[in-house]
Image (tube, rainbow, N blue to C red; front, top):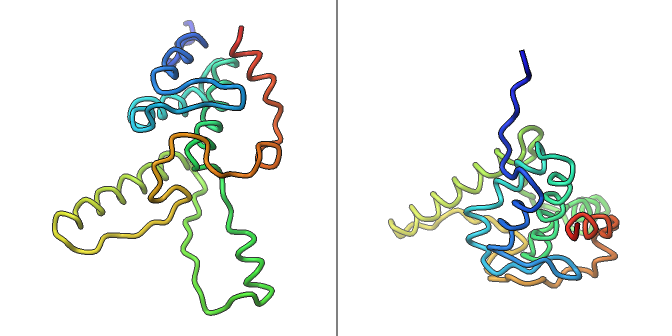
Length: 169
């Protein structure tokens, strides 16, 4: 009995790039995003699936697109490590730091957390009650171009040339 072929979101690199170009452009220094809401609504879940289960090239480019899109939208990786270190050295005290540590199925769990936040926020608006407050790097900004992050060399040390070669094939 032959092994069943797994259904993938993007069967080829061309299909992936064509889908991405509906929402953004590939630029010399990363990506430009023209339709952030559309990308969030229609493409990001596909990119995540491809980043985990796609063929070699589709997987690599999906991961690169996710990374670059996050940088462009100002939602790149962050850590509160330095904040904790400062507290340990006495720079602050008597504060709490809300955090959620997710260990498994992180994408699905994070997605569920943000969906719940949206529901609670919209429910509080309709009832005129104060809603939950969740602070993210991009809270309150409508930034669809590169944000004021550190220069690329300081925030991403990976070799981008391999992705450019794959994309331009």
